[in-house]
Image (cartoon, rainbow, N blue to C red):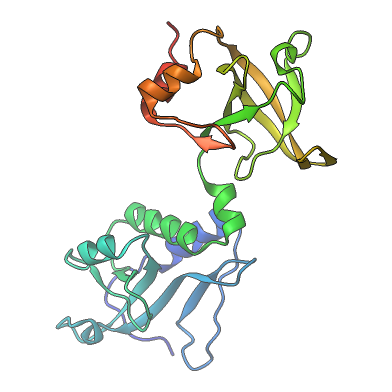
Length: 257
């Protein structure tokens, strides 16, 4: 027998959202609590959501009936603290950790807002590999040494080449190729079109275990983004491995001027 509720619960709408977006099955792990449902990652088995039907009084509310709530995990304790001061939000019910929050599924909080918190919780509880896959495209500077490869002429006849894959780089990212001495400047902007291409190479201290495929998007004059300019204008004092770039440099590199 289900607990009495005097409102329309968003439970089914939330379940539909999770099933469609994350291709996930809803789990009911506790026979003692048949109204408790869990959203779980398939790889690391961590929960990113728990839906429960509980007495409103357990949340400090005055009504006598039961209410459906969703427990989700925020990306910071500060955000969790802020949410708990808003109508419809509470400390995570029966969930350990300062980042967990309970939200009412009785219409107090709009469905669209609740779905956004599910997305946040999914990313916050994801495995490292899945977080990497979920993150938005990123811009990198990567080094290239003309001692090992004639990078200056790499795109003379091909617009797409294979290159050593840097740690953290994924398909869809942008790489700006910095060519070492005697050029000492950024020469190319490339889009990463494929990663994790198996490869084994070792020579004179250089070891390569996988390649990425990169497609030329823009060619820079060797005098435009020199090492001296990178150092003096953008506080980049070395390019020894893949690294992110400051917003000011991104704007300059992506300028059409």
